[in-house]
Every structure is written in structure tokens, then in C-alpha cells.
Length: 265
Image (cartoon, rainbow, N blue to C red):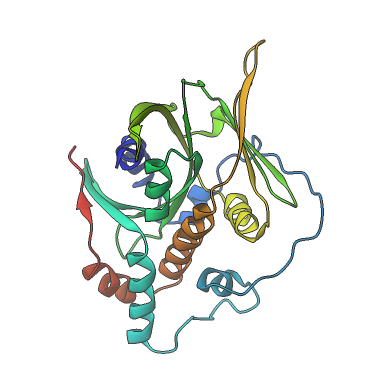
């Protein structure tokens, strides 16, 4: 559960900064992308469509994944229940943070990974997505850069795009009880980032590089993305796009029946 505590530390800052401006999520997600570089390699391939893929299609802006309201509520509830939500109050409001249980399982096993996150402020406000990067190793890396290599692209995220300083912690890995170090960083997800997450899910191979590049003695660690990350990203994208495209009434009904854990301030 330490991942959630790390996320919550960054989350409180996110809530305070964003709550006053997140009435229009497009305005929030239009943050600087100059630090995010992608290089094309080859053509991508199509896969079976998830709910988020249907709702991302631009040719029919009025398209809904279900015809009647009750079915929309059920589908949104199912998507929200696929992630673990954490509730916290802050000065001026409250919010829910959603993280896939697949991410939490990665942490328990000591796997460095991508951490997609959804923030929900209430039915009248569009959701906000963040991308987290979680490095677990034997010693602190003091990471300032994360690279994600798919079959088609390389995505580079520098620490100037992170919403908080890199969070550090120590954890014990199951089942042997090994002690590891953990570093986590988060950034607001732009539209380009959401496209990147889709590319990551669709890519047959995904490599992660956690690095300290801002030094004359660079250090970096390369690893494969855990397979659980694909489902974690899918879970959050489904919840994000279904919530984004739902009416306020559907959102309210869906939120009324989800479970969450309260985070102590």
C-alpha cells in the first residue's frame, strides 16, 4: 500500500492546484509537452476495442457506449470498480484518486512500472488523468528522467514535467522480505500522454528506462514493463473515458455505489 501513500502525497498538491481550474479538463491537460519527445519507428496495429477506444473515436461526438441511462450507469460503475479509489478532503473541496490494483501488485513484487491514475472531483467536473513512474531498486537512483520505448515510439519525460519532487520511500518485498528503495514521480496527462498510453497497451514490447541524466556521471536502469501494466492502463483509460463522456446524472449514480478508502491528511 506504500504506492498509494506516495501517490497521495503528490495527489494533495494536485487537488489544490487543479480544483480551481479543472472545470474544463481540456484546459488542464494542455500543459507543456515540450519535454515529451517521441520518435516514430513503424506502423501500429489495431486490436480488439476496449470501451475507451470506442469513446476516443472522433467521427461521432455524440456516440455513447450504452443507449439507456441505467446501462450507462452500470458500465461506468463496472469501470470505476476496476480501480481502487482513495478519498481525501482538502482546503476547498474533496476528491477521489483511482489506481489499478495491478499497480499495487507490481509494487508488492518489487517491479518498476508505469502508474496511471484518475482523479474524480465530482459529477460536475471532468476527470483528470495523471501518469506516475515508479522505480524500485537496491539503492536510490535520484531519477530525473523516464523513457518508455514501444515498438513504434520512444517517450521521454524529464523532471521539469513532474508535478512534484520525486517521492522516495523504502519497502519490503514479498515473499522473501527483501528491503528495496522506491522512487515515484507524477505528471499531468496531456492528450499526447493519453495517446501514448494507448500505444503502450497496443505495443507487443515495452521497455522502461529510469535514469539520472542531469549529471556528468549519468546512471540508468533498463527493464521490461510488467505485463500487469497493460491491464492497469486499460483499467484507468476505461474509467477515465467512460466518466468523461457520461452525463452528470450518470456520474452521480455511478459514484454513489463505489467503494473507497479514506486517506488520513
